[in-house]
Image 1 (cartoon, one colour):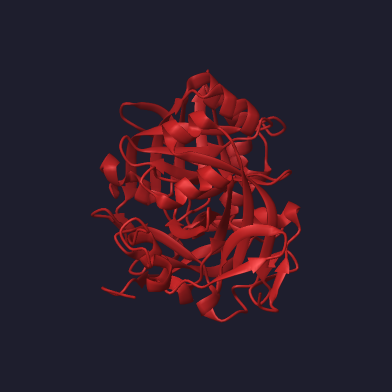
Image 2 (cartoon, one colour; image 1 turned 60 degrees about the vertical axis):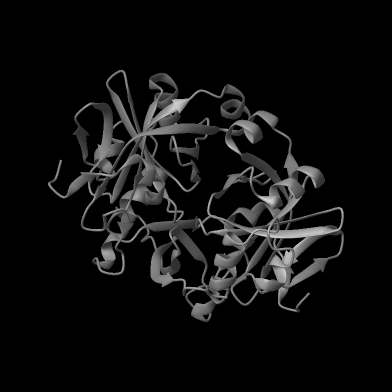
Length: 194
Length: 194
């Protein structure tokens, strides 16, 4: 684990995805690791912190999540644009070397038997709150956030610092058909307005 | 309705919120209209198109959604930063003139008995898919998108055109404590990479 990574207090962990970035979902079961891209992940609650993520039934990563009851939501950066696109289009079902072919490097965090993707700006370790009706009807999974970390070069002291960090640290916001936007300029609201 | 507003085909309607913007939620019941801000809204499915939104039990707008079974998710712009912050902090419960005091102007769309907020970039009319367990346990509402429109000055032909429009049209991405980011630069993925 690189020395820039530090824990984020759980009551502030929703801030890591509050700006609506596309994310990488990773999971591990039975000696298999996988990583997929997801645009449909969203904070759900503050205390205990929870989030939602939509995992299609065709996704191999979903199987690992269902089997282990655990997953990681991580926030990829502009530097990882090609990696994010690649893990969103390759499948472990047809490419057994998907992770290597997509340029994914994994690392571990003590106390969590989960694969974390290196180079991201933030990581949220989640435990599935089983809701079979949501999972089967809507492909909708609810996770309780049980661990949170950030790369302190872009998120520290409870805040994103995109405006002071290298632009390569900005998050990705996927639309469709290979088109992404980066997170843009900071917009502080003026006191007392309107 | 201003002449720049045009319908968006429902199979492409998820693109209006796919980049994870903060949104305005509006609803109408019994002669009462209200508007709130929400950072926790997310696409859920393509066909029929659906989305999720988290509505706190303290929100007056939630009552109107529960009573009418209908709501609008709309995408505010950088021009509406102060309005968005204001409707997120004022409550109709304590300020009967909330909408006027927040600078909100409403308009109608034929065939939909719903209040649409003027000046936004996109609008999604939604019908609640009743899921009492989600609503009561998680404050999580699922809506089917039954109508979609955009302001063609920034979204047309199925695509956002932030990079060619005035920067005041960009979407807002809320973090916490009055801090927002704007949507940033376009990042097309290169063919065949990696």
